[in-house]
Length: 279
Image (cartoon, rainbow, N blue to C red; front, top):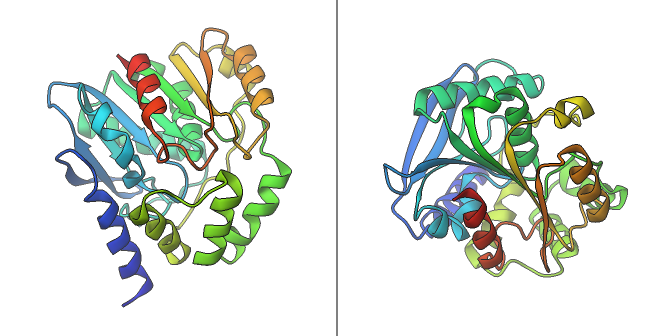
């Protein structure tokens, strides 16, 4: 069995655990086709979910049961990253290409007024889109956002480097255990994470921190939710910067959560806070 087959089977195994009926569609864009998982009531408020880098749309398996009660959920595989989106079109050179990609998806899927929620790299993309097209969004939720308000921890980058330079299942497992303090609770999710070691990605865009003046001008109602035990960055520094740069935002901390335990591990508190904010 090829490495790609192992990865796709692990992807599908996690998707089968979604506790709601889900429809998978592929949407054409100038950059290639985008895999979108859709669930929830057709008349629900649209909600777009952008996963962290290297996790794909299936990462929301522990959240969609609650989120899809009142929202029409659209979870995307990120263009250029691993997953079932196919980057075979225009190159991805920076944030402008990712916002153009999202523009097409919002147009095609009729998502004007949607709430937007992202984790880590997905949170950076979500914030970039909110600054680009604030009138298209309802509310914005950023889950332990990467390089949005402060830079990453040097220690985190050092530990992540082996999984980036030469990823193996063992290195990915060790990095996850170092950052979260434990192995994933769900066996299918752990198998998926290990399968990503050989999954193909074409381009993960370098995350440039938004300009201060752009953040201060942001008009989208925003929740910044940080993992109390995140090792990706200095949580207090990120919280202070978010409060300073987005004075109208709600900035909160998830007790016991780390960067890589969001959104899959012990999701009850996250789901409650997200549901309260989005409704």
